[in-house]
Length: 86
Image (cartoon, rainbow, N blue to C red; front, top):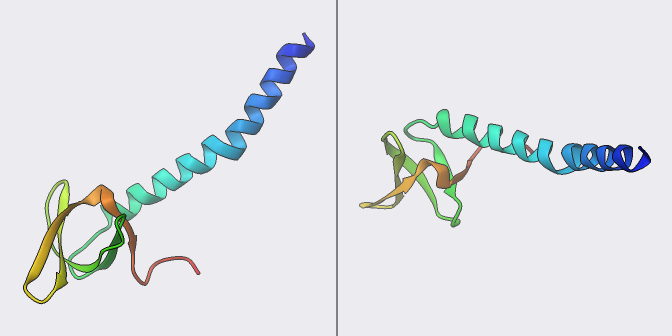
C-alpha cells in the first residue's frame, strides 16, 4: 500500500514539475504561431531574424535582407520580436 502511494506521489511531482510546464509552453507556441501576421519581425529556431512577407498554411516567407526571402515552417518560428516577456 505504501509503495503505491509513493509512486502516485512521485508521478504527481513529475506532472507538476515537468509535464504541465511543457504543455503550457506548447500551447503558448501554438497560440503565437496562429497569430502570426504580415510585417511581424520574427526569430526562427535557427536564429535567423526577419520580417514576415507572406503566409501560407504551414509556412511563412521571411525577408532576411534586401531582395532575399526564405520560406520557413511556421513551427520553426521561435519568437515574434516586440512581444517577448521581459
